[in-house]
Length: 385
Ligand code: SF4
Ligand code: MG
Image 1 (cartoon, rainbow, N blue to C red):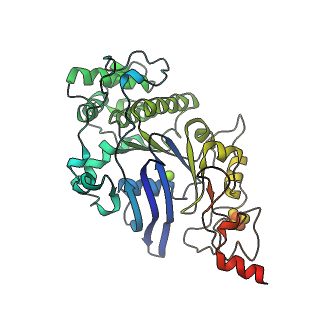
Image 2 (cartoon, protein in one colour):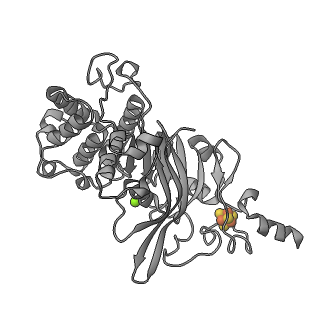
């Protein structure tokens, strides 16, 4: 399958005064090109750390201590003529039939290794160097829960979006202005021309959030990483933003990695899903397999904890018995065993399960309930007894 990013055995550690915290403990997964991949799990499971590792913006003193992040640039080619189904968005922004929507600088000119092989291990690039800077923004953009992380307080919202468009889409200034206002309208801003002339501090929190999303989408990155960007928004705005992401993803052939703790968001937006627990991937599946045929006991608990109507969908997933172990403690065996309703004593508390293929295309789980998960020497020793 065509993947835009392949994460291979990634380890990230945070040294602290009382010991090392292993934030990622051998994480491997693929981000499929032109699709939406959901990353789910409770806070502290490593969802955001993985995203920050891809962007090379891990907070100090954290660092990547092993593994690879293989990046293959390229969007699925689309033209304006083949627009995705519209949702009240009238004409294509550029209005000229099937012209290329994006006229982008070729990143391969900046990175000889990419020009040679079409692939680059991002962990080999200097996080502060020009190559990684070129990748951030143009190739991989990230949006956060806190909009002021990416908005500049001294420029108007319109100027910031226009800059992104001039850099990544067109050189025509009037066209860039039109597209900036159009993008603000598409993220559901009331009175887009007026918002374009406003400074970030003049907007409400929800409007700033939408401005940041408009700016990130205007870069039309190869990969958009969204880290719980709609968690602070009301349900209607959230639905609007998710629909917009779907639309632009289809229109521009972007790949999206959407980090969330909401299974509802996963159901609404994603094609494939990665479930993380304590710095490891515990299950990978298509969205259908995950909802109709979940395998890992942790995934099953997450699905049971989907809030019912009337309960805030952003409540923490407390329904699962027990709490996530303290990251400083070392859990032996399966990290989920202290909370698992299916725990097998003598096995789950001593032996770390391996990732194994289960029923369904590309469906994997890391759990001793599935034979391939138990290392061969352990299972043969058990049969010999
Ligand atoms: Fe539960 Fe054991 Fe599977 Fe871990 S390996 S999820 S403890 S059944
Ligand atoms: Mg987070």
